[in-house]
Amino acid sequence: MYDTTLLASERNGIAKRLLGNWELSAVYTIQSGEPYSITSGSLTANGAHVSFAQVRGPLDKGHVQFVSGVEGPAMYNVGQLITNPADPNFNCVNVTRTQTFFCIPPPGQNGNGRNIVQGPDFWNLDSGLLKDFGITERFKLQFRAEVFNVLNHTNWENPRNATSGSPSVQSSIFARPCCVSASLPSSATVIAIGEPNRVMQLGLKLNF
Image (cartoon, rainbow, N blue to C red; front, side, top):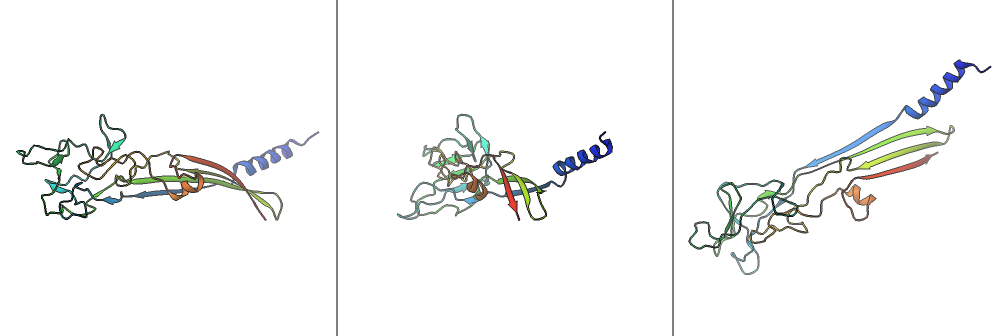
């Protein structure tokens, strides 16, 4: 007859080996958006360099938003370039529902300078779960489960680096951070093209 006390002890020992001593780790990264320059799209200061935009009114620093009829997000919702010379804001675009205008500077002027606004913020969560299993006194097997970008969060690129975006006020895709998203180097080590979608990997490591 089998000793039920011994059986229960063995079951408890197996359960402890499987369920006990797990280690959980996490790396959370958050940073403000990279600064970028809003440009005029014209050579107003000299014949070699595109000048910066001139800001009229309070500076709206922009934020990621989705605009009707626009593919992907945008940092600003702006109207068309004002081309009526009689308009006091001639050669400007207006940020919708604000008093902010980004303008082409008059000849000889260079606008408001570089890096006056910031691109989209960046945040990411990576996590890992691991456990060591003792095989012998010398050999240990480690199980690892790692997840990159746990929440599958999209981090948009800066408009100056975007595939469908431009920092120029004369561009039809002004201030769009679309459509390649940014990723941490950790993603690039798992997916060769560095795509920032959620990545999960499992591994075994033998220590001796």
